[in-house]
Amino acid sequence: MNTSYQDPVVIERVLAKTKYIAVVGHSPKPQRPSYQVARYMRQQGYIVYPVHPAAKEIDGQRCYAQLADIPGPIDVVNVFRRSEFLPSLVDEIFTLETMSEVKCLWTQLDIYDETAALKAIDHGWHVVMNACLKIEWQHRGTKNTER
Image (tube, rainbow, N blue to C red; front, side):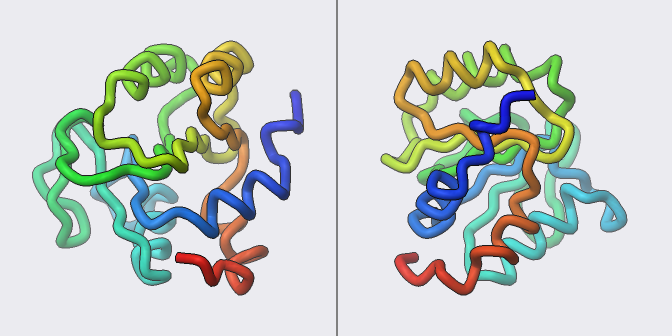
């Protein structure tokens, strides 16, 4: 696997500039990693939009069926869906009108697709793959003072 999608400089820059995170595949079940990561990031002061097609609300937050339904800005699209869904998700993010200048596709542990990563990079996106947002924030979070 290509580890260039875990560049510490990119991770630090993205975490420092991010305010809004869309969590695709955000589970309504508190025991699931997507729920725990999203809750943790909210506790750190981020605005987190849950994205799940079947849920109306998760952890007290309005849930959105798809990324295009999110009314506010998005800095990071944090993905908790299997790798096979990344190509269509990447195509979807290019249609969003609410993306900020940060524009980062971030996939959680064991989620990786080289073609999707290269396509996102070609469209001017930062890409972090196969890395946990919560873990990376904990390693670098004390340096995130720009937000």
